[in-house]
Amino acid sequence: MLRRRPAPAEPPAARPLRLGPRPGLPGARGAPTPGGMKRYAGRCITRAATRQERRHMATKNITTAEFEQTISGEGITLVDFWADWCGPCKQFAPIYEKVSEANPDITFAKVDTEAEQQLAAELQITAIPTLMAFRDGILVFSQAGALPAKSLEQLVDGVKGLDMDDVRRQVAEHEASHQH
Image 1 (cartoon, helix red, strand yellow):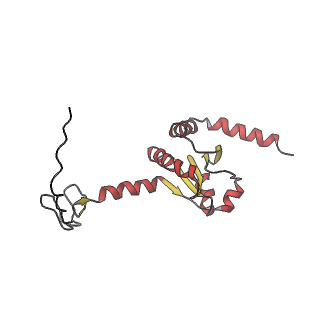
Image 2 (cartoon, helix red, strand yellow):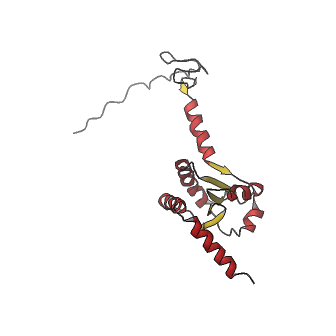
Image 3 (cartoon, one colour):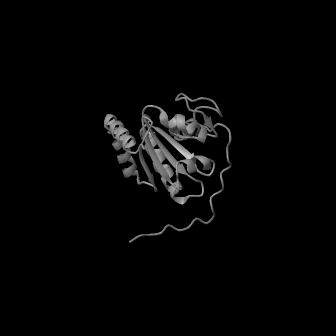
């Protein structure tokens, strides 16, 4: 049988907020600690800032002016077309970010379709989120809709595993058959 503790007669007194160094903690306000982290009000702030910086560096927001240069280089580039008002875009964003952090060898870019309407129109983006994958400047995947994490990871693995000589041959055949 469970017993309840009796409620205290008086609520505990509120502890005053200390903004200076706390007893027993190394480092004064803003001073580096032995581990290299800074303390402010007794809290480590460098580690949180580093995670935040990595989070923002994993994906790159690009504009119309940067788009061609971003996708045309060697290697793999994934581009997420999104808008701030889009619910599925907001759900997909942390998945995209997490996969980008796990694959530093790939360029993960984002295009805000509200700010870059001309680019979205040129690429015929009719629904968002839309994800495009480029490898060595060739579009190898384009799909509207948010992907689950597992599917995005499979896409990345699939693009990495492409035989680009075969892809270039197929592109050349397609272009030759559609010339008039």
